[in-house]
Amino acid sequence: MSAKKLPDIITVESEIKHMIFDFIEGRKKNLDELEKAIRDDDWKEVSRIGHIINGVSGAYGFDGLGEAGKEIECLAEKKKKEGILILLQEMRAHLASVQIVYE
Image 1 (cartoon, rainbow, N blue to C red):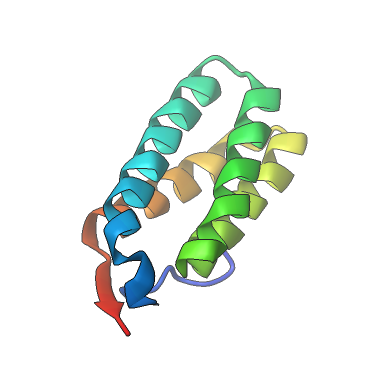
Image 2 (tube, one colour):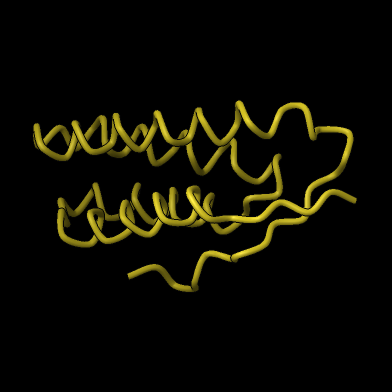
């Protein structure tokens, strides 16, 4: 569903290395919240969570994750549950397996 595959490797500035674990855990929490909002058909909340993911991800080098968050926002406006569920699965898999390289 997403425009492009989420990358297997993310390059991050070493200055923020100490923040990456909390960033990833925060996005996992967002995805749990997103799943609940989808179950509840709470489209405003789905859009809000997509917006948060979009807004914060680029600062940590997770541009693809941010793009997926933006796509969730758009799909929420159209109430496209199936597309959002596909993105949710892709994002969970990405956060579980992504390799971080520090520069």
